Image 1 (cartoon, rainbow, N blue to C red):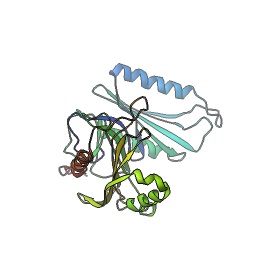
Image 2: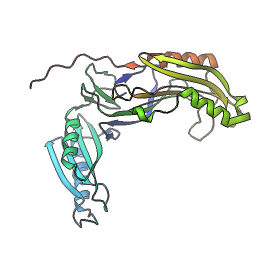
Image 3: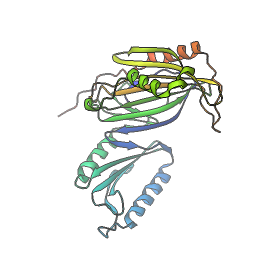
Image 4: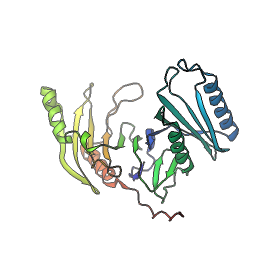
Length: 300
């Protein structure tokens, strides 16, 4: 995920994720043939070309670029009444997978937006799910963008823990400017306790305090609390707010047990306090920067 690794029990599955690279939103990867890809891209271009901007009374499509036969880039007004914001769409097909990137730019930044989109697509590959690249770059579900230089990168994902249908792990990695730092986790949790008043008597704090994970100083708060039907669940959280630089992002990791099923009913937790804390320590302790080899020198 992004430039990081985390270990989870074998058989655990990714149940959702959102990814941004260099302010580019990455849509879920879709499996399709090259012919299906061509039909989708041609249809999208035709739709943009035939749509009319109410302000300019001209086509919504501003520019269409084809760097090579598996890549298409479109610039279009973001809305049919806008002349101030442009959407850049980047399509690429690799070995049976369709990738779709989208980026918003100001109306006078069209060419820069197209160039940044073209650069991101040119660095894209589609590794197997079991492959962990040794090259520096940004990992997302179904794809990899090779780049030794950190960009403005965001990742959020949920993982269903194998063997425990009521347990899932959530991870957020995002840039956070120093000026935007919130109060520390434990200080905020203390304020929440005061807000809950008498309700807090049913919450059991299993552990809290400072916790360093690898090179990242942070804080954790581990609690057990009853749900609406009286069954108890766990809410564990650790976070670091980073240093406000691209390569020292803010990171938040949560483990939840007793989660509701697809019908909204709270499930009985499958883990005791001791088992939940053991799982938490194993998973959180494994979080680390993905080791990579030095990038090959490039010619001037």
